[in-house]
Image 1: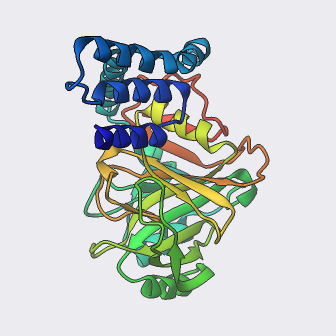
Image 2: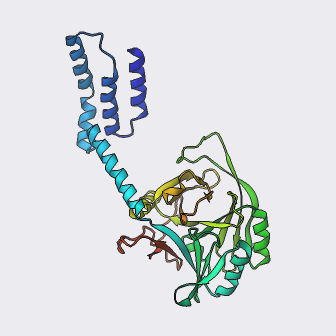
Image 3: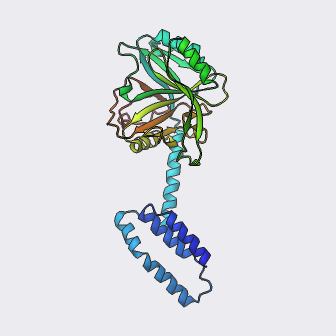
Length: 339
């Protein structure tokens, strides 16, 4: 009995996040203690006294609205799971990101030469779409011409991430075709992520570099996967409130949280990666290691950041989001379009 009681007590201590959790775990713990050796009278007295000890916690839970019967929690969880599956079934996929540039031709040649992307005309031939030649499911880049074209870091949009076999080779190609080196190739050591739960005592090295295309848009290159050609995988956005942003992207689009990463001590920031559930367990700190279910989005929160209210000319284009309300505004005012 003492062993069972000790285990139950440890379970209570490990689950004390809210009054609801504490009360439910304590009541469950009482039920788990083996009192079969007691007579009916002493056994009843044991249960009554145990429940009386936890009445203050129960009152607190009721007053704060945290209490729910365990069966109702199970039902709520099942409903939430069904809702998530239903939302994901809508097939909302990040198809492409639009970059405003002053001249599309040299930028298109840069991506074709360095990354092997193929160029096609967009709608009404007013833009150029760059896509992976072997997979329509990978993230695309759309180039639109305009006098205000070019990268502006103050808008919150921080560019793209590209998976490749050789960072060194791509950096050389980029520099030879009108691009610029922002960060030389190096091995960066990432800490453990909280989701998925990684070993905090370990470091997770990643070979990476940052280059800019001829229009100034930054491209984070990282070595992962075995594809013959590089793959555009990730859009990187700065946000003002990471939790509100995560909730919006997961609830509105039916996406999943794929990774939650603190960047301390390298940078005072948090990065939350959201995207299609197909990418679960197929992700490293920089982005997906495989898969072609559209792009993922990394939401970076810098400690002490000011409200963003993005006026970025860049636009994220999604497919399969016909049922999403146009009034459902992204928390940091990033421009989104659903087709």
